[in-house]
Image 1: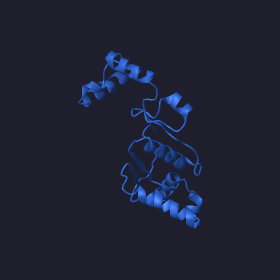
Image 2: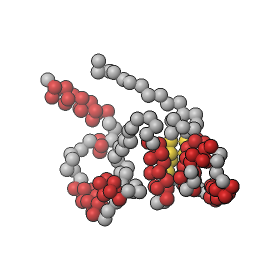
Image 3: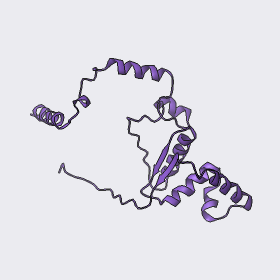
Length: 167
């Protein structure tokens, strides 16, 4: 009975998908697999991280894979993601950093502190020395026309819900 239900489900899924190329034998394209293997032999194939060990394990962040960073509140997830985003930007990738939890100005302060190698805590509290202020704002002004590191945060109306359709 379970197999029949599963078969009905997948038959319906295949019928609902207009592009039937999405559903095919796992062995259908040997040439694609071979090309991917050859790229893998060359090293990091995705967006690299700052950490060689992680790159060796993952070959970088792959576009077709979902990566989840999870931890309790206040553990530094956003800062970690900003470090990764900054690294990717420095490697020449275009970055869009989206946060539903922080405003755009909070994102800008944190990322700008990372880029300018300035203390975020002192920047946030307005406690930079006059030399640090001058260096920080000169660096940020010089980057003001850079459109490869974007952020989005204000006006995001996102809520999380729990769905219990299985009950």
